[in-house]
Length: 392
Image (cartoon, rainbow, N blue to C red; front, top):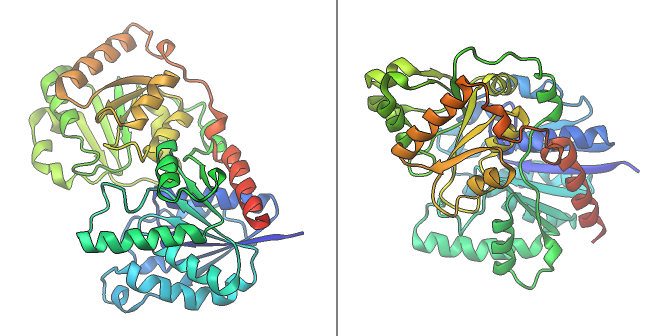
């Protein structure tokens, strides 16, 4: 029997982002297993963000991508997804939802797909699985007025009760949601972490590393959450002894004045966004991969799993004891974890560079393959969740 699903997501490739790539891989793998796929998303031409056309190279010809028409705010250049996207998605998705076996909503960058999926599930009776890339109301990064937060809290609890299953990316988030809606069974909230494409990274096994000691960072920087300030200060402390650094895809507008420093202007090479596969190639070439952890236990940066796929040592800058990524790297011996402070970072870089010069850098760490975090293996988990939700 053909299994049919409808994914509701505000953004989808060619718009590039961690959650967009997550569901791209899940859907491609599910299509290979016989699922009939349909995606309802926003017309990418009206959205802000970077595009990566290469992401859709392996998109199955049998799968559909349907674009919800932008509402009045978006047509005027202002994104108000919580106000307008559920309505536009309901209009576009009503007939689609009647033809599928299950609905899935994927968030962030905003939580409007959950609202849209709830409306369609209520009207059609189709089971609904919600996937949280980040938590919603209790997330410290969720910026809202007190009354807005109170409304969102009531709304989220109501929506959670309508789901058949909820997918989250960390165990801390699972426990938090289980506590918010304690009457739901323990198997209602399931951890499905981010991952990496095993096939993509295996194809890069023969890529040659940089000839000089080079630190690579791929992804975004965010003031207050994932700031490179202390790392840049560490490079300045090292002066001429600082290594070469390549930063690809990050917005550094908040640190333009800092980057004008003579050491940073000489040592830091800034690249614009590069296609996903080229970012993977750059990671494979790195001597060291830089990771800056989040200041909460709710999220582990998706790039950590890509770094695991790249199989290069990681220098992790830990933002406090609740930084889940640092604990994970330490437990698996994937690299060196230090406090996100200039002196500690400078000492760690000097140590790693010395070990590299002596030819004993890689041997200190476990750089073996970790198939349990490949998208291919994680799709097994997702498929089981969908089948259980359909049978519930």
